[in-house]
Image (cartoon, rainbow, N blue to C red):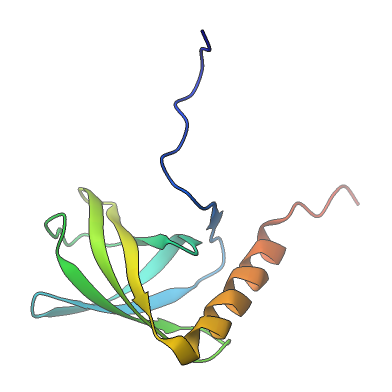
Length: 116
């Protein structure tokens, strides 16, 4: 029997976002600009003090140098006063290469740079 941490239920890995990467999102009539804390091909976690019910749909517009990235997502979990975990349900076809480019850039930023 193994002891230790519980394995993640997530099918794809996430990249921790340390640089300021922002997303504009709309949900149930409200609009907000939030910082992305981590991002993966399947979803993201955003900082927000707003709570939303699990399962509610959101529309996302990423504010990134890679170009336009629009997506739809649903709230998978909410952490009070911390943020929301969102699962992508659709990413606009023309925007998918931009999402892949963003993921590549963020992976590059999150790599340790070694000792100098």
